[in-house]
Length: 148
Image (cartoon, rainbow, N blue to C red):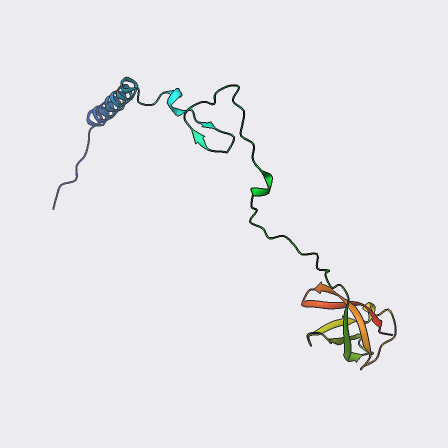
């Protein structure tokens, strides 16, 4: 088994001094080589956003760009109207508890509604128009009116 190495105070001080000298030598080497000066680190950006190491010439006119040739990655939106009002049939309505379900005529999905969302009196089987609103458990029917 190897004997543990212990350093005296003098040895530790000697190591610190050697590290300081090595660091000082590296610093002097970097200064003497002069590999990177401030002028080497400057970069210029031209009118097209390209980075170069040559400065732009003063008085040079930037080239004109035809705006119709620029392509944007997002597709144009169509002028299609967003359906805000839906039609459905009251599938279930519990008057004592004040809630029910409306089944959409378009996609056969069922939507919860509360009696506070009714604008007119409704019963099971009535065809109604309604709007949708996001609730805590999904989409809820609100502003429910009887279809005439």
